[in-house]
Length: 119
Image 1 (cartoon, rainbow, N blue to C red):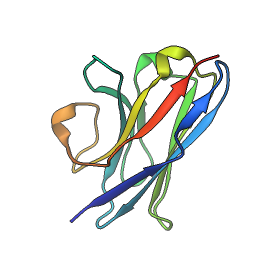
Image 2 (cartoon, rainbow, N blue to C red):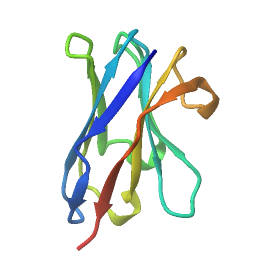
Image 3 (cartoon, helix red, strand yellow):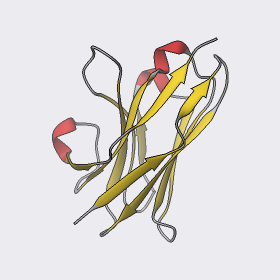
């Protein structure tokens, strides 16, 4: 049984930074961050392989967000810099048996954490 718990969301002004954390229990899976804004579909943000040697990002966050992991602490982190209002969403941590950005790969999900970017 995989359990995921996100933390670190909140409010930040445009141009600011936030760091999201996801603590996981169980096996060491490939991990991803997704987000969902009101009225929109869930959107892929970033993913990292179980060993941490591969990462991938959606174009809109490339160069601003960084995903990393610490398998000793069972934690995945999403560092978000130069945030803008379009980044406002509920952010979800998810685990997958295979590495990639397709929604169908992800079988386990956290409860989500709200990120709000506004003046």
